[in-house]
Image (cartoon, rainbow, N blue to C red; front, side):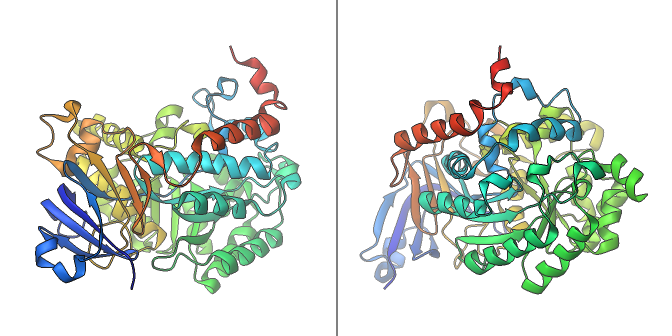
Length: 470
């Protein structure tokens, strides 16, 4: 018999389901990885099922579906708080050319420990499923870097979808990529094939999955995207890339067309594809995205930090686009806190509400970060709290003085009131991975010391950028 767990007497349960159901003073019964029942007084109404279950006392707690991170670069947690390569004063492509001189120093250990740092931050702030776009493959580091990320995710107990990226266009032919970080299309797809064999496609209740993710059209050969598309669809896995973040003038100069039109021409669009950023997308391109089912990961932090356009989410939603939320890499965010990104995204939309005739509510932004993210990853088993879905959730302790007077509306609470600190509990597949200030089953102090040493050994001791901090 699978283990059973009863989350008992939660002050509120925000389901994010299709009917936007909200329970008050209710329970959640978990069996194995899945939710078996939701409702009041399950100990009485489902007595036979509840018998022998482990109890979590949720009095005073609001329960939410686990957040789904749809775009990140974990390795960049070791390139944070670094003013020598500050993002706001540069275009994206100029910034890439500058910061890749640091990225090329990264080794296998720094991939592992930087992933632990990012995943710990995500888990502590309510994220239960994380996608990372790992495109950093310096030759000296070896090919097994996504495997090191998988090791980190396994240690912490979080669901992880690895986006195996690549850059294939040499600097001599117009990219911003150092030669030390170039791969051939064959090398890239061969490793994708290996990884899919090991970690799967993100099937229901799976803890891992692989996404074929060439880095971006401007820094890859055309054949890389064409062959990635054919390969991914033969394997029935999803596709991801960066698009609409400053590269359009270069794409027009090189190909005579904008990035999305280039992707559409080769077929790199569809319900199995999602893109990151998209602040250069036009209203006509919203229609292309919607009609093809192509999704978009909205990353508010880098847009704000870099002074770039703020997505018109009302217009995108009206067009029928599917949106998710992402932290983006820590070099353009300095944080892996998706609750903070949720708050930032809501405030950014509110700033434009008069000019755009309204903005998403805080709850609608929460659904983008949960249900929307699940759709982008192709995971119908997560994203909302419903019977039969995975028990991926987080809880917020509302018996706090600072929340008094705001708890009447659990659905809108998070982004509206700025609940962005560590949550009370994070659960993945019925297993508590973080509770009351502590990650479960790991020596956090030891890991922090090891991670800092790995950062110094690989990067701080070798990059002149760290000697110029004032």
